[in-house]
Length: 209
Image (tube, rainbow, N blue to C red):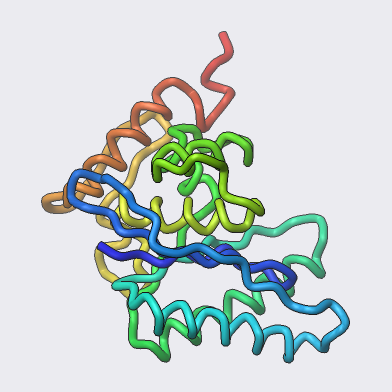
């Protein structure tokens, strides 16, 4: 599977493409960070990001695109512009006729490190290890985009508009619920997430007492 990962951002937008085989072995195909000039009006900056996404899709022909979901933060302006980038990215993917998956930061961290609360440095080092890179991808936006692509390739769910999105879930206690037979990627994902949830990696309150 060839997956493109997008770490949305207006100043820096991480774009990455990886190939992942059935044994979960991942290979780096392409990674870059699309940058925009802060002095430009927002709509021109969004056009620049969209152009970069279009170029990567046309040049590397991913089978599916994955993007990280934005959560509310204290900085409302940052959230607003990031959501605008998400919209632009979704338009690019839709225009290319490709399936799109959305993953939370916790899902991405769990897939790559086994810990949904991992620090950025942990994610970066694990991305380098998974891809067999000599150095950690820089800047962080590049590593994040790679992590998002790896997450989708390994997890295999999260596709927008798919009836299968809710067919696999893992409770806080680590219990796996699935409707129908899971794919190898889904099975590997649920096993990893169930194991780390049973040890309290996601919910630190389970470590007490």
